[in-house]
Structure formats: structure tokens, C-alpha cells
Figure 1 (cartoon, helix red, strand yellow):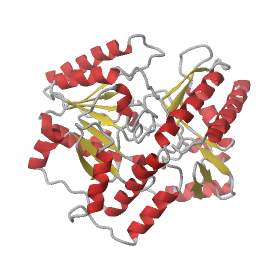
Figure 2 (figure 1 turned 180 degrees about the horizontal axis):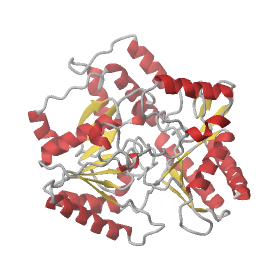
Figure 3 (figure 1 turned 90 degrees about the vertical axis):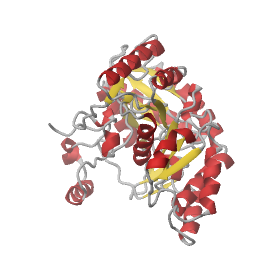
Figure 4 (figure 1 turned 135 degrees about the vertical axis):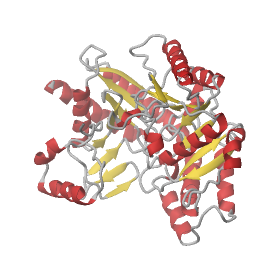
Amino acid sequence: MTRPEMVNGFTSEHLSSQPPHIRELIDRRAKVLGPGYQLFYTNPVEVSRGSGVHLYDPAGNEYLDAYNNVVSLGHCHPAVVEAVTRQLSTLTTNTRYLQEDLLDFSERLLATFPAELDRVTYTCTGSEANDLALRIARAHTGNTGIIVTRNAYHGVTAEVAAFSPSLGPTSPLGPHVRTISAPDPLRHGDVTGMLRNEIRAAIEDLQQHDFGVCALVVDSIFSSDGVQPFPTDLLGVLAAEVRAAGGVYLADEVQAGFGRTGAGWWGFGRHDVVPDLVTLGKPMGNGIPVAATVLRNEIGREFGQKVRYFNTFGGSNVPIAAASAVLGAIEREGLIDNAREIGAQLLSGFTEIVERHPFLVEARGAGLFLGIEVTEPDSTEPDRETAQSLVDDLRENFVLVSASGPHGNVIKIRPPLVFSAADAALLLERFADAAARVRRCA
């Protein structure tokens, strides 16, 4: 069995068309990097520096970065650079020493959550945070069964990859994992009713196989499932079913969190439901590896009584300094409001573009997290090839986006939170031009 293709991934069939310098870099990667690495784009992008919402290649070409969620404040945000530099020259050690900065940040972070979520444990990555959250959930529930959506991605540790179906058939799910559909209002009418029935069937199957129900794990924007922000009554219904069966609801906020949806700090807030555990990652340190599991105190009690948990760099000084700077910048610069306002501008503009093209069927999103569905003309049949053509055209015209969804046909747009009205206007202009070019070539 061959390795599955990554959505919007470079493949060897395009190697011969690359310029000599790019071919040389790809060859060098193959000779020194370990297995599994992949590049974005049919024609990979070489980057040498970043600033704000832009990336630059060695020739000085400026790319509008409308995808990178790691640096959610933009590349090289001065507040993060200053905080990390200052902390590196002062102290870097671990959580086994008393340190006020760790407590100060933890109190500020928890203040952004509902009061029920009152404890936080730090890790380095979102994958680690999800791994830890599942260990805590298992200790609390005494069960092992996990329910996720059908194309979800939650991480790359062995444990978490076992419930990340988007990794493909060569990365099989664990026997204790069951999948349900993601919401897809474009193709299904009563989404909430349909998924209530699916999760009940999944719960029953887990119980029949003696796994019991440990956790429902859901990304609240359903990013890998094709960016599905609606309906917002769904997560409360699913969480209630899982809790009634003895499980917990784990909200994976690695992609949807830190104000990205423009409706408060956390994506689950749009759904009017309070999770039992929440995991944070990528944007938390704006490029510095820091992540966390936030939880209700009672959920972690059993784990805390039986397990001694330690993570050398989780909660260490430099990552906490970066995370503190990120939190401060989001508050100081009004970036949640900015995500809502610029996101509305983008959604309105993309909707107008969609109406002009028969192969674009829907623009959807929440804040600065948007998806544009690409289909066969005047149909709901997914069209991955045309979606890739759009992504490639934009890349050649110095705009970076990607694709998502089980069929790879949803254009995924996720710009830094500092995106301005002018940045949004440029993105819309170039997307409209790309759609027109792709339509002519179809």
C-alpha cells in the first residue's frame, strides 16, 4: 500500500517541472530528513523570512499568507519576539520550581474560559495535549471508547493518530474508535437529527464491544472535515448523548481557538456548550512550541491521584513568555473583534464571487476561518482537481491558501488575526481573478 497523498501536497510527478535550485533542495531533503515529511503545493514555496501577514522567498517575492495558523498574530510579531528574547536572557527551567510567571499566565488564560474549566496542564504540542487529555478522560471514566468525525485530525502521537482518520487508510484507527459524519448542511437536511442517531449507534457499538464511552473529541470548526461552522446547536446535542453514556466531551481548540472565529476566545463558545476538557496548540505561542490541556478540576482528580505527570518543556519559561505575549496582543490589539469584522468582509466578498461561478457552490465560515466549496458545475459533487487548480493559481500569484475536506475540494482560508481590510480586499481580488482563470481553463 502506498502512502496516501496529502491534500494540497507536492508529489514526485511534479519534480521534473521544478527549476534546478528547487530540485536540488528537494533532493537534499530526501537525503537527510526522516520518513513522512511532505511539502505544500504543486510547485513548492521556498521561504526565507516572514513579516506580519507576508512570507518572502529568497528572490524577494512577497506572498500574502492567508493560511498559516501557527503565527496567528502574524510572522515575527514584535511583542512575542521581545518577550522570548528577554526570557531567554533571564531564565529557562521547568515546572518543578516555584515561578510566579507560570501562575500569572495560568490565571489569565483560565479567565478566558467558562468558570467550570478551572485547571490547566501544559505540553509542547497539540498532539501531546490531546494525548494527555485522553489519559485524563480514561482515568475519569474508566472507559476507552472514542468517537470522532469521519475526516478529523487531532494529532500524530501513536495514541492520537489512532483517532485521526484524516491521516488516511495507511494510518488505521484503533479498535476502540468509532466515527460519525461531520455536519454538512449543503448535502443533508436535518443535520442535528441525523448525527444524534449516528452517535447513538456509535455509543451502542462501543458498549457492545466492551469499550464503553470515554470521550467525544471534536474540533469545533470541523476544519479537516471541510470547515463546517453550522449548525451551532449540534455540539450540545452530541455532548449530552456522550455524557449520558458515561463519557466526556473534549473540545479540540488547536485550530478554532484564540479568537479565530471572532465570537469570543474559543470556538466551542459559538455552540453554547461547555466542554469537560479543552486542548490548545499551534497559535498559542505564535511559533514557539507551547500547548495545553484545560479541564474541569473534578475530571482530572482520578488521574492526579494515580499518575505523576511531567513535561520538561511544557510550562517552561520561554514558551510561557511567548504565550503570555500572545494573550496580551490579542487583548491589546482587539484581534477577536478584528477576526469578526474582517471575517465578515471576506465572507461577503467570497459569497459574491461564488455567485458568479458554477463550480463554486458555497462560501462559509466564522471569523477568520473560511471554506469555499468547489464542485462539479451546478452540482454538489466534489471537485478536488479544480480546487487544487485554484490553490495552485493563487500560489503562482503570491497568495497562500490550502484545501480541506474528505474530498480535498474545500478551499481553506485561515489568515493571521492581524489581517487588515486592505489585506482582505487583496485576497478577494486575487481569488476572483484566479476563479476566472480556472473557469476559462475548465
